[in-house]
Amino acid sequence: MSNAPVVLLSHEMLSPMAGGLEAQGYRVARRWALEPEAAGNVRAIVHAGEIPLEPAFLASLPRLGLIACVSVGYDGVDVPWCRARGVEVTHARGLNADDVADHAMGLLIAGWRNIVAGDQLIREGRWTATGRVGARPGLKGRRLGVMGLGHIGAAVARRAEAFGMVVGWWGPRAKPEAPWPQAESLLALAQASDVLVIASRADAANRGAVSAQVIEAVGPRGMIVNVARGSILDEDALIAALKDKRLGRAALDVFWEEPTPAARWAEVPNLVMTPHSAAQTLDSLPLMVAQAHENLRLFFAGQPPLSPAP
Image (cartoon, rainbow, N blue to C red; front, side, top):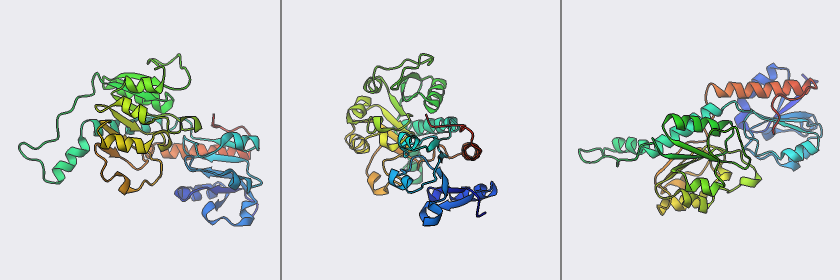
């Protein structure tokens, strides 16, 4: 094993991958316990793409040639910086789109139809002959706007159509092949939507793009669902709008800070949350891990990667 290629796990959440990597003949190092000698030999990093990888840290790994993100997203990695220094970046391209879209629709329905509130009402003994959660509009005929029509956004749109919703979308690039109309701007999409689903890839250009203005455009009868990245949504503005009833409801799987502090959400009404788990299924995870393994194999074989970051 002393001559085996050194692969670095960037975060403790990736620890379960260590055994599989060692079985493939790699020597596994861990960033949280990295010895200087091992740092000098790191050839590749296995990474969770939402976690920042600081250029200063990457520069301390002189033999680094690959960052293989197990996730679809890679917003924690400065891809141009890496490629300018000969470091390739890969990701899990399109492998969890259906599962994330399922989760988005689950959040949408749970929040829109007061399912979580109804569960709490029963558990707290508040269901009486006259005490029920209030009646809500159905989904058929409601307007759903998708921010970002990639693999996940398109999967959400198809599912929304199955519920009889009217779909529109917005993204920074035209997609003539898309069967749904593209709005002129994110603000225009928000103004035209009963439900706005954030499904775009996070980058510097869309940080905070779902701003107070966009949130208020969705309005007191509308809903925002975020299954993309917390950085895209102005979280403080969302909290204020929910408390002031300028936004009707929201559902979040991702947050500015993760894990997010419970106290931050204690008094926020009409909100459903899950702990960044949209992609966590027994179907998607093995595929994502396998693609990271294949990108490692190709890198060490001197071949082009299977799924380079765009």
